[in-house]
Length: 217
Picture 1: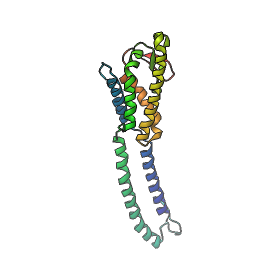
Picture 2: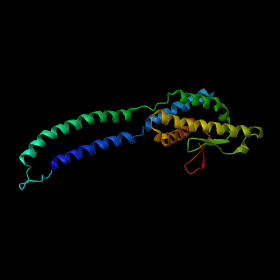
Picture 3: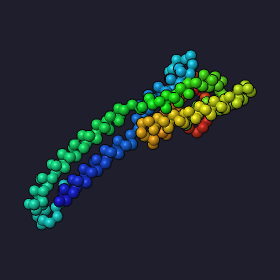
Picture 4: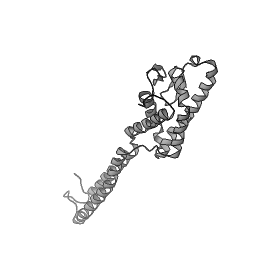
């Protein structure tokens, strides 16, 4: 019976390990593709002219199981092994499918946020070009040097930054929610921050490193 108990414990441990693997996986590659898709859409749709880028048994002095226990093991072990095999046959394809899955960014809410960002990008672009604003490591934008903007434009800069950051926060939350993984929001934000610098920023634009220091691309 101890052998049977050990087998049960081993099967449960294996199944739990498979479940944990499925739950914690974050598809970074798919997230990068989704970020690039949205960034390209914002840039192009925003009017930019540039190109987007062994065991013991108890109850026997001989160390062998009693005949009844032996018969039980012979009967139960194949059944448990078959059950475990069928469950794993179901779980493993699911894990593989998640590794290949796309990050869904097709919802109406995500499209609406993207269109809102498109609508102000041409205005923001000139302030990026002038070094007035820059990209942050949290996937947002921020004012870097307000004095680089003409006096009449300064209120506009602050308003555009606030509005775009509201859209960006809403976007990351919406993507995580659409993919039924709210715990992914921080990773989605990180991926977007990286892709905005690597793909969305033009040479000369400013961005912040993880310590908050401004650097020029």
